Image 1: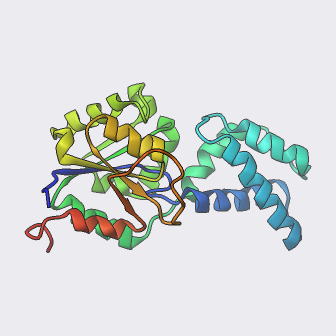
Image 2 (image 1 turned 90 degrees about the vertical axis):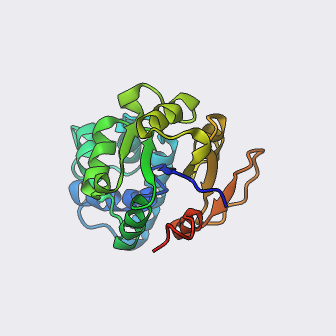
Length: 227
């Protein structure tokens, strides 16, 4: 097997479980705006909250998410600074397992590692700092900082230049076929699709590999790299 020199990662829904974080933020919103809610209604509210969040994915201003939610479920107390609420609480709703951190440490000891994430500087940096991920990466690139975003090949080229690694010596791992597979492939990297739920690929994008667990990345460490 080819010996690779770097692995680059997507952040949300790859290293961090954004879906669980949305669940956690919903609980905070309930406490702030609704108080006690009957369990059956709470399940319906969570489903709708996730629908509104999904519609806004990739949009930095999240005011419409909660305003739409309030319109459907009138609150006892209406937040006045919705964007500030989201910016403050959402990054704190993310967590990462010690197992994943140990895996990243093993990879970092043998290869260069980077994160490339689309999003705002404030929120993405807060997520990274709150989960200590900055300790495990040589380079972290946030789209807002560099005025480029995935799947633009230039954001991958920019990151590789900072790592001082050639495209053919690098892998990119992420959950989105367009942004995390086709994007890096367009810049000359191998695109690995992180697909833990086993979703069917009904696109014309062909990943170089598909994994359901980040543990499978150890396969890309050569025998002399594995301790």
